[in-house]
Image (cartoon, rainbow, N blue to C red; front, side):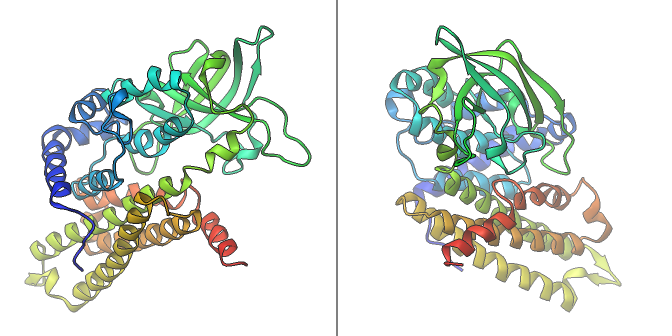
Length: 385
């Protein structure tokens, strides 16, 4: 189906990103995967390219308010090349919006120019060992000092993406006990420099996929965090965390659709070239039927995300609609990429083929940002069930 989402300006931007990927990412990506970490220099290059500070106002070095379409294009081009910009989307799509909405003027002057230039990358620390999706069960504490100048942060986090390459980490901590009436009360967002004394990196976790982006355990031992680094109001952290979930889930949905579309292209190229029983794999009816099924599913998911991007631009994307997008698109991607790998036969299981990379990378999309089961709960509630 013909897409009407993008203008000529967007396509010019796409060609710029495609050229950047070909020159700066693809030649090195296998090395980054082996190292389980992308060089920090990549973010400086992305800053110089002008894509680190979407929505950052011009007075802080950004381009001002922009459409999510530009970030979607970056996602599509990375998927098409079977590469990634490490935890770029965590910085721009997940964490930066919190700063744009909640930071004081002084905080914006202090942080936003560095983010726009690529000198500051961002991560967020929510999940703790034993808490999982239950953020109300967070045990990391931040105690206000007697003189009221700083908080003393203690605790541990896990599954933190991009921390090794970040200068600032938004940490969700408990500044006061939960109440019997509200387990979610007492959580606060603190912006913590990752080079703070007592801020320690634990194990770098080995994952099934997404090998070029680091995922770590963190610990905090008497970390002093100035009160000037509180993001928003003390005690309102839980409510803030829900504000950016629609955009985060849209981002995951876009990634899923782009990955599935890329998988189809890789499979098409492979089955046309691969000979079995004296003819191309593409000549078999089963191959044609499988790819036709995949194409139909991806077209439906693509139409869904394109509509959602337009709703996001007009600030009309609801939490329930974002849940529908994440649920449907990630489940589609899982099915499609699996089928496309099957068409590769044994070679599909070899990591030298991009389909294997897509297969490993996409599995977590049904888990992070809210599991598929959580999405179903949100959707059912929106249905009045």
